[in-house]
Length: 239
Image (cartoon, rainbow, N blue to C red):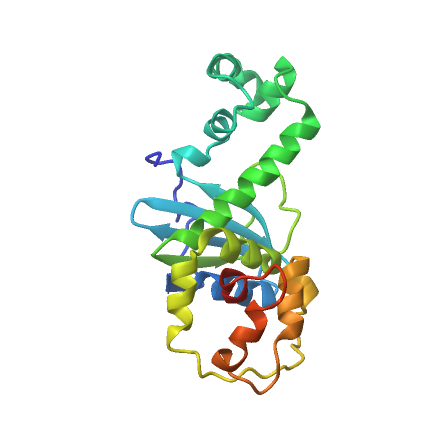
């Protein structure tokens, strides 16, 4: 982590909402704030890890982090988009660009504006998805607060991010354990008042599983039938 990079109460007043979340609670937290069309700043912390999510009309539009590996320069180095030498030269002239590393790199010709936009969008998504791997955390929400710096807004929704987070950050064993004592729960197919399968941006394979889930049957009763779908394994069904 980078000490002092984020000051989670810097804007000077008490949060409107606070709470704790566990390993499987973060998807629920994202859903809740998306469903209520939240506007404001959400802080997240786990030990020394700190993040901020800026919400606008129920969409996470920007994420900040104090994790060194999630800073733009480290992110570019890790993916071999720029060299250490190029990055050092960009930092030497960063004051001419109001502290914006990306602008300095574009001016140097190290990256194109379009490529920078794509990288920034991917970086912000990665920052948010990393939280799905936290064992626990604390959150606070400050209604109405906006990002004070130049941002690249996320081009996705909280619902699609939930799908990505489950697929990328929750392991097969964790998902299996989660359902271990829920195998007798019976599914009911109901029309959700806010959410559709399309909102989750499911892959073709996952959509086939979703559509094959039967009404009024337990997980145990239909699990064997679902994993028998061509190209589908247990992990896909648990996700």
